[in-house]
Length: 359
Image (cartoon, rainbow, N blue to C red; front, side, top):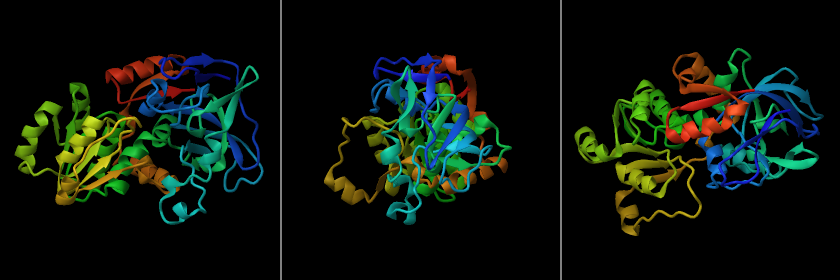
């Protein structure tokens, strides 16, 4: 079968192979025929070396498909089920899961993320985030899939697997945006657009989109932003809109030390600064002890939108069905797997919100 393989992180190039084989289905596992996979910025971070991964590796962690084989001991799943893949599979039994922090569960991922999920030419190949959705079929732990309604289109379903869950969840679960509040989002790619939609769903009164690329700022207005500015224009708008006091909620969807510092400064005293972007492990951000004490701001990170995928995947589907969450509009490009490298080039250029690969 076909798969997109990265052999040398940092060289910026995926190779499409045609002789990949998914691992055999064992107890507690299912095989999924991948129908659609989104191209997420996290995959780009693996390609350019920002995030670590063990090569050779099949990329992709934002996908949807149908179950074609079920191993022994798998509950509540059957061949033919339509599913969304989850890169943080909750075990449902550990302390983190039972206390409402399923996104921090490592009971399943500590094993699945380290297991070679493919072979190519008889050699083991790993799967990014334990999935590797840029392949025609994958074998995963049953906890890594969540069944959804069969009427949901594959491309729409795939976006729920990462970017939408992360962004909407950051607004609803992590920061807990309140009705009538003021919100600013730095970075208006797929994650930023999802944060904006989450803030709109939560009832925010003002939602400001900040991005250096004009096209991204224009796109943000379509999804719920009430104002758009470049980084250079932000200070003036902040003075006009919130009297220079800062915003109730400020979100960072870039992953750089500079914007993280800027987002903290953009939140009002007593407000919340939520860091959503995945940055480098060798960068640091400086805060003085006095400002942390005096400003009384909540500075929080968010992993996977602080989501429990068993609850939030179906919830996002319902919001989409109700017309309150625009997923179709986020898909600005569809490509075959053979053009996946072009998808990453377009992402870097900021020309698209989300590219979906049809398999």
